Length: 418
Image 1 (cartoon, rainbow, N blue to C red):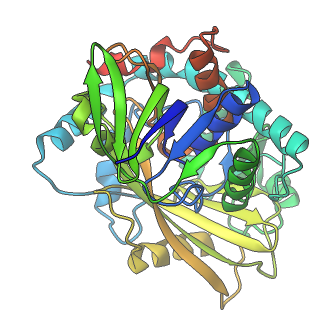
Image 2 (cartoon, rainbow, N blue to C red):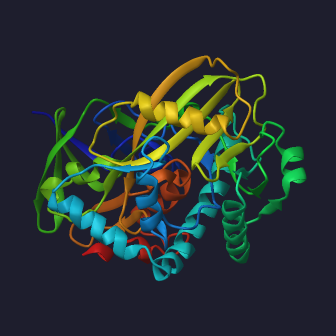
């Protein structure tokens, strides 16, 4: 079977893999991408499209476990779900997650998440301007809507914390909220507006990025799953695929929720658990939201994407399964109708499910492997794979080049789990 030589081989052609390719190509490296399916069509393509440097609190935070248990008592409307399994790796992940839901984990996560989020937001703006990507990119912030005093108080508390870390935010009373977002229903009592955030159409952006990466010279092998590795002397000698073997000087593992399965032969403990989310995309409604929204109590995202409107929700610890649940899609629509004005009959274009690669401490895994000297991790971004793509791409390119990364990556090293 054919053996191909590669300079930098990227495993995975989603938001992270394509962003890594883009910044490596800009530095003059030769890039090869292999993906088990089509590039630009993975778990970021159907998501909310939010670019959120404001998201500096990790998923593993105080109060999450009891809140999740409470949500599960209302399965019809819950934004959270989990599979039942006795798989030791799954149980280990759940225990690690529960133990990480503390204040010290939050304080450890804020600096790298803040640095990576700010770098990504800056890189998005620069890339879209330089490449003239037409993907409905808007720097209008992210607006949280609240219907209860308790939730609004929690939102204001979080806003105070964000401001202390340099995140721009406006707290809006009822009158100010309705002036800023006319699509909100009358019983929405207030909002928190993270004005430094942005949003875009993720499928359009990723298609344009994939086209640009191809034009810059990347070789892309689609429908080419990795089947194994040849390793010797602390180095990956070859990556085995259905299209033959690839011998590469540097290998970037950016396979998202599939990372543990892809890396099985490497005998590395990569605690990435897949978490399914859903979206439905429709034609523009009569009263379109003017901002990207998060519905505070329901944890549902709303994204105006030019002549489309997308509703996104649910975090469901699951298998590697992208089956769409009509029940949960209906739950998302029902939640949105509680907060904003939707047409009675919707013109649905697409329903979708995708998998978020989630680590137990809520931080991505980025950095060079200590076991294989030519392997670099770029995975575990959970719900922020799109948002953190360009920042991750830049720092991975810096690692490949042997340069100092833009910020301290030590809290994101895979070895923190070993």
